[in-house]
Amino acid sequence: MTAPTKPSPDSPADAPSDTSLGESPLHGAVIDWFDDNARDLPWRRPEAGPWGVMVSEFMLQQTPVNRVLPVYEQWLARWPRPADLAKDAPGEAVRAWGRLGYPRRALRLHGAAVAIAERHGGDVPTDHAQLLALPGIGEYTAAAVASFAYGQRHPVLDTNVRRVFARAVTGVQYPPNATTAAERKLARTLLPDDERTAARWAAASMELGALVCTAKNESCHRCPIAAQCAWRLAGKPEHDGPPRRGQTYAGTDRQVRGKLLAVLREAHSPVPQAALDRVWHEPVQRARALDGLVADGLVEPLPDGTYRLPLT
Image (cartoon, rainbow, N blue to C red; front, top):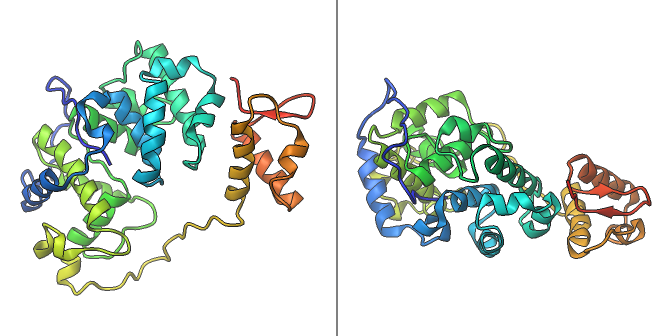
């Protein structure tokens, strides 16, 4: 969901793939559309820097932009550099994460900040392999930070990009539930040879999926590549693959975990078991959710039977 902020001409690029299309007819149309339609988001501004880009990428995983914006602004105001976050307890990261959901991301971001402070002098590394070696950084996030923060040439495959490629090139309504080797190969094939163009293409194709080629209400009349879209030209055939996973929440362990964490985030001293018991009526599910939070390192049980956010 980000765009290049501080391209580095000295950063090593991936060697162009043997299957690279170089300049595809899709590139210019999508990038031109992006130039005219890209949202003005704080992590896209030059002052965000690589750390701002990294923070945004952690927060935007499975979370919409409108929910991320206020938390992102507060986070960067409090922890403008990785070393600032690394000095605080991981529980403070969980507290500041608020209601973004999937709070293990906060712990992973804190772990990455500690590693950046210890291994890289407090600066987000420019090298893709070094990014990938950071705790909590996977294939997508490493590629996104290298591309959006440093203008490097990497295929960046999030859900939005995968959906655009599935429709425009493969001719199906939705991509598979999990990223496949075929999708990675297609992304490399579509990657422009020029480093700066490749970084722009990554951001532009992502924005197109977020704003136009959406999951439920695609706006083909606004799409810059509608005339070339294989799925539209085929008559928009219905999805015939495995059922798509729904995002249920009410009544799930996720909801109970969120309620328990909300109590701990609001408290600045250890919380007794009785206070946690009041947030959910079903004791077995409540205990299971609390045990899961402890196992994930999000909650720390104390010998006296109270609980707190983790200090180490």
